[in-house]
Length: 114
Length: 105
Image 1 (cartoon, helix red, strand yellow):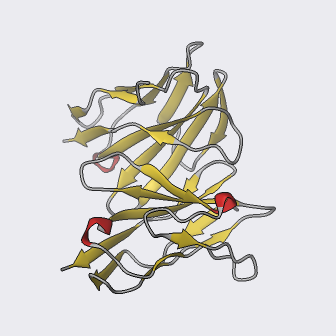
Image 2 (image 1 turned 60 degrees about the horizontal axis):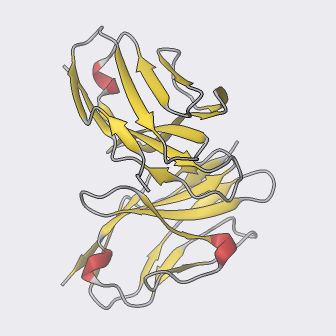
């Protein structure tokens, strides 16, 4: 069974640009969550999607958005990039939205904003 | 508000010493708590969950509702335990800031 796949693995962008990151969950998993990982802040929750609907959202500005498609694949978009957006962005998938569900993580997309 | 706090950024111990990684949570209702681990160059993965009351790789964690804690413990640390450890609570899956465990030979 293939794991969670995130593309691309690495990105370098310039301030002011926008970027789209992609996440393909494990087959059959319907819930996808996104996290920003930085050395100083750890793992911060961005948002969760289930059945193409955003179910939960973290405390990030509106420049961060996402969506989920009918095949459960998800994309995350960041507009008007800032230097502080440089981070590892992780995607996690779970079979359902149950509180006890184990989350499976991708290897992440390393975004560098210059 | 749902929150998970790991007070230590770095915990450094010698091989064979006991380890305790601290985690405190705030959650209205009955929380589901987890420990996730990230070894060097590997994906973040589930280590254990409180509902299972299991021991994984010698690690255990007990939920203390009175102290709102879910500390991770191991009686004798091994060098291969060196990794980043994250405590998490569900609802939406919220993580603490993470603790780097460094086990010295």
